Length: 281
Image (cartoon, rainbow, N blue to C red; front, side, top):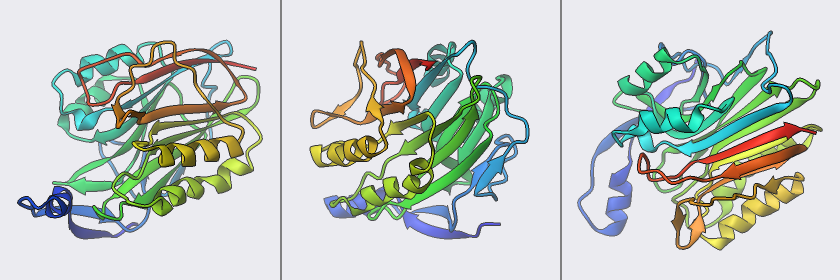
């Protein structure tokens, strides 16, 4: 069972740097990574969750993945947008999911298999990355990396899914470290995943909000992806949100055939989703 520490963080740290009034917000931060499968009554007490029975993620050799920073569901139309983006998807990778009443209601009404990483809790509401899938993963593990300024962690989920051709697909849902001057913490976050990814011989998807707001960060991610034989999806419609001219969201893949990918525009978040369809080789 993980222990929690009260952390005075959030906008107060950034506000102090900017010279404006600070907020004294308190967050509950776990001392070890936690993943939950039952988000309607979350028990974030496990680093990994395994399932003895895991059906193939694909249907007739094809599947679709949607990737979206949902902005803590702060926009009123987040649910209708999510339903639209995910209607043809077997897998949805969310960043900045806040497990409030509205999201719980949506999940309760859906047929999704849910896995969530608990990055931290604010007012007893867990927040972190979340996987929604049509079938259970064989296993899912949580990862945390501390933001050096905010002192709040960014989270990742690494899941293994069965495929109909007998292979195993590894999927990483990542929310990249953001508030860091250098690249050390950013590189460490990726390297924490390398041990598992480097020994995997099958298909891989690495996706999420990487916070690649400058070229040096993009170079780190591209070098990491290239070292694992991953390639960036080609988007026929690229409406990804950009900061300083750089896209923040990415989807890399390996040992899969890309059928098509797009990044349509929405006003339901401060990020636009990536939707990609794949076929087994």
